[in-house]
Length: 189
Image (cartoon, rainbow, N blue to C red):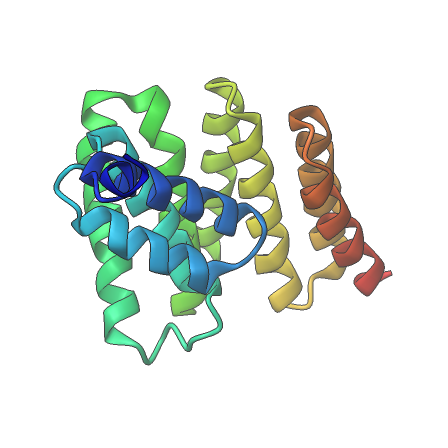
């Protein structure tokens, strides 16, 4: 019986989805990408799970430790994630608009020379997440905006965004994320 359940594609898809989400929120981006790649290719993964894994896989590409600018596979994954979020935003702006904005912000940030567009997109992602009451994604948008400013040595602005992210994660109830944000703030101050 147990072996039968473990071979069930829907069960495997669920394991990969939950593995991806857990890995992402714990900051294990390569592990997240592993679960996403396995889960997305599985034909029995429910559609919403696939879309969410495409989004988190796209965000993970920027933070996985591999050089995004020189890795065509990561760039292709991000382009696909942006394409899927654009399509989904047409169907449901309140659910996917913030995700599209955040992927675009990260793309502008990591591709360089597009700081103004990155800031506009981070701001839009934060506002759309707040409007949709996705406090965890609002926190993520604030956190990634803070990292953008930290990379650019705009440390006072980074701290402001980290504090906003911390408040969101407190509301969400994620002590792991709160602790990670506190470490980021402490590394600056």
